[in-house]
Image 1 (cartoon, one colour):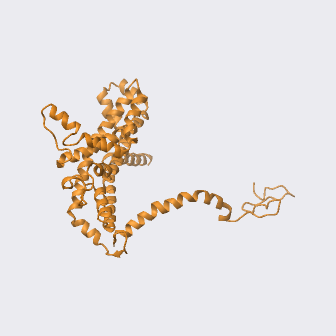
Image 2 (cartoon, rainbow, N blue to C red; image 1 turned 90 degrees about the vertical axis):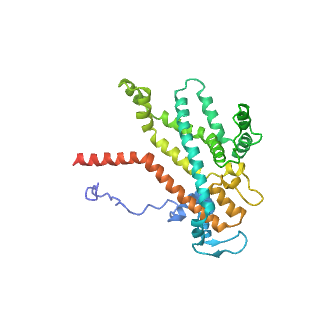
Image 3 (cartoon, rainbow, N blue to C red; image 1 turned 135 degrees about the vertical axis):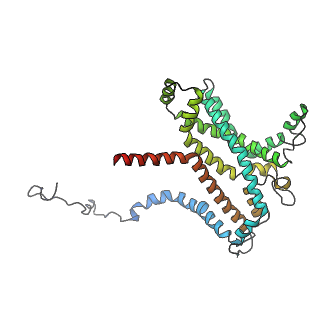
Length: 338
């Protein structure tokens, strides 16, 4: 109702007029003074995030252009750390080791996670027990777990080599052979994360409506056709999530090779020949063993770029088709509307 429609003799308060003051005569606090209790309540999170999140990131950028041993004064050296990074053979060896371990661990892990999730989804008895059992390795102390599995992989007295010698197959240098060392680290990674990824895939399976499978069964689809043409395509977002998180975790691998192959007296890491030196382990060696914090920061930013590149590749390989399909559908919808 407008001012013209108001009954005669009765004033209508126009929109946007000032609020009526309270009966006690006090005026409402303006601006930030009115909301400062709310700002104060949420400020601890932002303060902690700025101190432990934003500041370390900004300081690492600053350090990557400096020469600093952790105690003395910093000295600006421009792009020298990054220029040396490109020509550092040990850095490229750590990248190669990391990618090999990542492939050896991620591909079998995603496959096993899908198989376990499908088995848990179709299992009839003891579902809750199996779900807890597969998730236990993920909450176990990684250092303790690696120490136990390291004794299993021991070259001389390990359980695995003892079993191989019992069948006259000879032993394998799990902690000394270049490829066997990478397999040992990958096996520990798989053992730790396969249950976690299986639970995520199981949640994705349970989110698929049973009507879809019943419709496929009515149309005459067998189990193989149902799995490859319905289950896997509908699980693609979950598989993308598992692949991206596995990529990030695999490229940041540190504890397993650090515990299996500790730093020797000369400051070397990653076992004989550095064959199990990952990128993060190399960063640790440069920054905290050799006290080259500036170069260590440059290695950290190189690792960040590598993770970003591989995450984009995973997204394009696994999730890109969904995006293209959505875009195609939108374009078709627009053309039909016209």
